[in-house]
Amino acid sequence: MALFTNQATLTYNDNVINSNIVTGEIVQVLSVTKNALSETYERGRTITYIINIVNSSDADFTDLTVTDNLGSYAFNTSNLVPLTYVDRSVRYFIKGDLQTAPTVASASPLTITGITVPANGNATVVYSATVNEFAPLDGETQITNTVTVSGRGLSSPVTAEETVTLETGPILSITKAVCPLSVPENGTLTYTFVIRNNGFTEAAAADNLVVRDTFDPILNITGVTLNGTALTPTTDYTYNAETGEFATVAGAITVPAATFVRDAESGAYSVTPGSAILTVTGTI
Image (cartoon, rainbow, N blue to C red; front, side, top):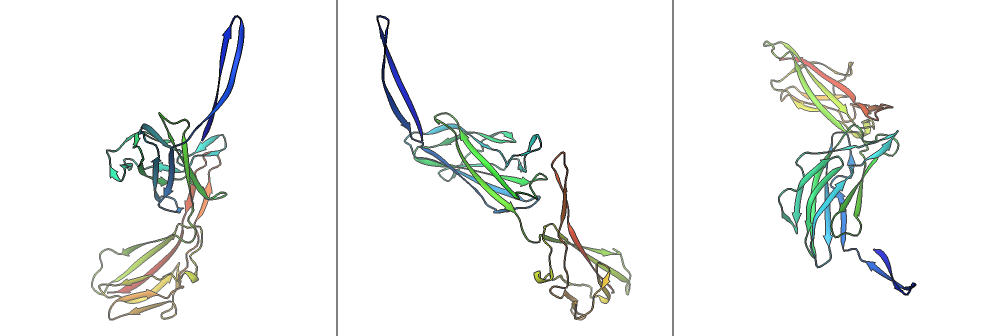
């Protein structure tokens, strides 16, 4: 809501008479909300944002501009932007019906033009952004970005913000390799499993990590190691030599947390994942 005042003057024969002061109120009829489909973030994750604009008046609002600062924050003498708009991801709906994609006038700050919100109706703008190397990993581990709706017919812009926080707990991935790629009958080969942790919390024994695989052709296992240390059958892993089914015992594998450093000048974070290497060697 915005108040306005006004006063008239009357002049005659070199006299100036002021009227009383009248006060009015401009009632805001356009509102905006913003929601992220993910409550947390990690490097490389794509987050979808939903902007809902509601018009409670009897007149259309046309040619509005939606601007998102993509979480911009101050660092040293400049601003860093922790989110990168995903090109061509914007979608635009009026009363739930998909419309022609609006114009993206700028990717950072994200600026979307030509938005119409019908009388007593709503418009929804949906877009995605990817978490980049400037997303905070220490201090205030959150991204708060603000959307602003401005344009003709509005006495002042309307805004909304959404906050996502850094993902806690381990964030694991696994890759598998075999060496050699060509092996003769009754030859020896090694399967190598690399488990990476991109989270800043260790994957501990209590997290019950288990690696399972079914070796085909069936492997006559001669050795299993974790980070170069031999594992013990039954205690650390199980193997069915008839079916080829292999599994580590829950908790036998742990993976250290990722680490990071921040460039003091650019503000960019460099992340080194924690890792554990499991090898299974045998003959076929």
